[in-house]
Image 1 (cartoon, helix red, strand yellow):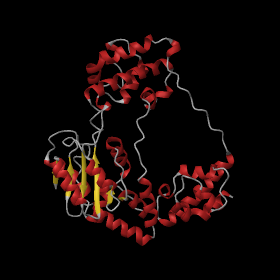
Image 2 (spheres, helix red, strand yellow):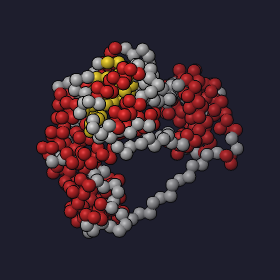
Image 3 (tube, helix red, strand yellow):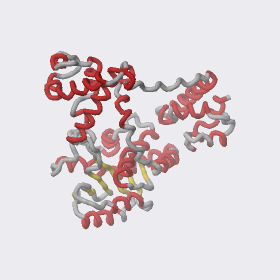
Length: 374
């Protein structure tokens, strides 16, 4: 294992990896610890070498981007979705020619598709668990954390070989390759509107306007403090505690001290700020209180709902025959897209016009699906 912190070492490592046919890849972020999440490590490994790249020590990571975009080298990820999105977000990197071991495992019918379970089954390797929620932003990184990061990619080439062999034997390699190609189009979609983010707290939309205003003020206070300290928001105060304060609308320290749902330590540490936030909400004019719009209820379409149920029955039967999780074979949202498409598909060409459907799903389910739409 090499720990890469200089431009020359990075150039040499990437040049060596570009001569390899297969390269495992992974990233480590720190959203569990930091408010401003970013990539803090990039791991790359072939069958013979593992490179741990430190983005905090390097100002130019373009060699990594070149390797990811190199179609001559197959890049192996486990559950690539988030890695690819944050590589796009932080560096604008685009990956080509991918193999995702999680997707491959799902399509072989594996019941447990986590990396640790797969490596233990296929490679006889037991991954350590003590650094799963480690703070990868810390420096210097202890040797044990570097070893843990290296282990995530060191065995990906072997796992890929085993899963690819299984897919080929099952006649499903084409299914996986279609899914891998779709991964190349993943992009960072951006954060949600911060002004409305407080509404995503569980229970927020059930609050009356005054309490909702308090929750909004409390949420904004927490965001500002977390950003200032660069700490994950839940490490300041959790959503449940914010909701409890918003519901109670406390006016004085004694109200906080007796508030169920707010730990005493948090009441003592943040009491003044919590009361100030609630005070702002109590002073907000009635006309300015938040009143989120309720989305209009979608009109029921009994015929479409019946088609969804027939499609679901077909999907479940075929999934059982193939030994697949029904959701892996075809998710409910895709079934609904087929059932509600206009005009309804009457042949495979019609199914191909439903953008949510994969070609392999049409091949596997096409005739039975068309029968269910009739």
